[in-house]
Structures are given as structure tokens and as C-alpha cells.
Length: 262
Image (cartoon, rainbow, N blue to C red; front, side):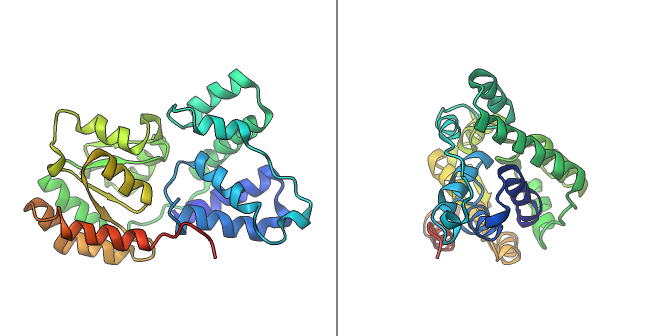
């Protein structure tokens, strides 16, 4: 996520909205929103809204003379209830003709194109692949994500780890909670499902659908995957994860993701 955000998403935000004069502030805010805060893992469009909301409050931005977009149409789109992605955004652009929404759509397409053409593959964290293999031997493994499915397929296939999962779902399939409900409907009881994630939205989706959650803590990914492999997975399979064990993990995870910048 760090490479994808810092090398591809953030430079294109700067370029599309002419933010060179406040590049430092933009990068600080965008990294906070997308990597180090409770907003981490959000769909790119609400994350863009939050980034500009916080950018307006940073020292030096008002004095720079840079004109920031109001994003009223983007806010309405994000609150519309439709699955957030390029397909539905294109439909909204065609319906409204809103110029700022059009710029957001162009930015989103440019991000996808830049990632596809230029992003260097990031190796899986230590313990992740062997843990995936171990999970696949005992359970059905499904990818739940707000990344476009095309990008997910490319990333999972690059290191030949798609073979460990049954389904790969992306932003086109709706929210994370909707994706969970879709793949699990009439197949698994709540006590037989575990959501493994690194964002507060993952924890919220698990809570919304009534399933347990195991956190991959940002900045401590290797330690998290090691714990999952050596202890947490066995507890889940033995029916011992639910309750105090899982609750303590989630509480520590939530504390690690602040809501406000310093």
C-alpha cells in the first residue's frame, strides 16, 4: 500500500489538481489518510474527499493561493449508495457533466494506468504466503477489497498466490460488508468465518456481518502474520478465537490507527 499510494496515487493528485505549491502538505495528509489513520483502506473516492478536507486545515495551504475543489458532486456520489468504482463514476459523469467529477474520473483512470504500466511488484510480507497456504488447506479463502478487481488479479497472480484463494472480489462488487455477505450467503455460519485485514474498515465490515476479525497492524505486518500462522489461526480453527482473545487483538489494532493528525 505504501508504494501504491506514495509513488502512484499521490503524485497524480498533485498533478491533476495543480498542488505543486503545497506538495509537502498534500503528501503528509494523503499518507495519514491512506496509510496511518482510521481511514486506511478506504475506497479511493471517499479517501480523496478526506484528503482534501484535511488539506484545507494544514498550515500554509490557505496562504499558498492554491484553489482547492469543493467536491460537492463527489461527496454526493460517495453518499449515493452505488458501488464506488470507475464504472459507476463514469455513469455519474455522463449524467451530470460535472467538470470536477470529470477530473476525478480522469485522475482515477490515470492512477489505474500508471499502476498497471509502472508499479514494481511488492513482495508478500514474511509469513504471509505460508500462512495463506496453511489457511487454504483448512478453509475457503476469499479476497475482500476496495481495489479494482483487475488490479487485484494482476497482483495475486504475479507471485502465484491466487491458487490459495477461491474468490477475488474488488470494489465493483460493492462494500466490504456486501462482498462478505455475497460470498458467504447460505454457505457459512458467522462463527466459521474470520476476516483478516489491515484497515479499520475491515474491522467494521467484520462487525457489521457478525464475524471475527484478525488485524494485520500497519508497521508490524511481519509480526502480525507470524502471530496468525503460529497461534491465531489454530485458535480460530479450534473455535477458541471468539471472545476475549479476538477482542484484545481488535482493541490494540484500533488504538494504532488515529482519527486526527498531529
